[in-house]
Image (cartoon, rainbow, N blue to C red; front, side, top):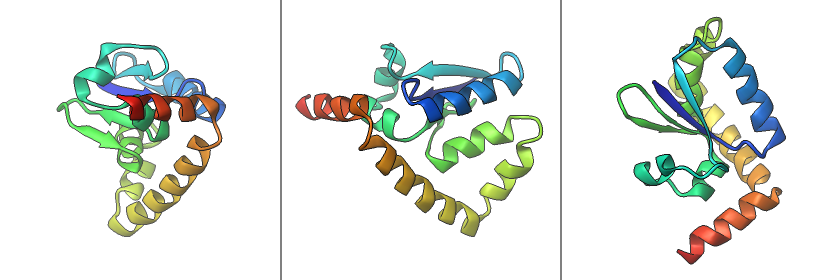
Length: 125
């Protein structure tokens, strides 16, 4: 099963993940809202603030993917989205998408109170 760690308090993130959940094959994904405490993040050594900032996915081979790489894993496992996943994985396209995504992720993260609080809490540890 593919594990997807996402920010359930972010309206945009939730809308996108809820759409994927509706079209995803049953039993293919395990959707984990990182705001709901679980041992899954701790077990993988992922800080809450990192998981809030960018999408994290663990594939069926137990490999961790972040950011655009995480989206590629999701898209390649959704009917009608495989083409986008394969297109996004092309080296130059992937590099451009990575830069765009990181820029957006940083902007979004710094605007949401729960993200800032999580970062402060992670820095205290």
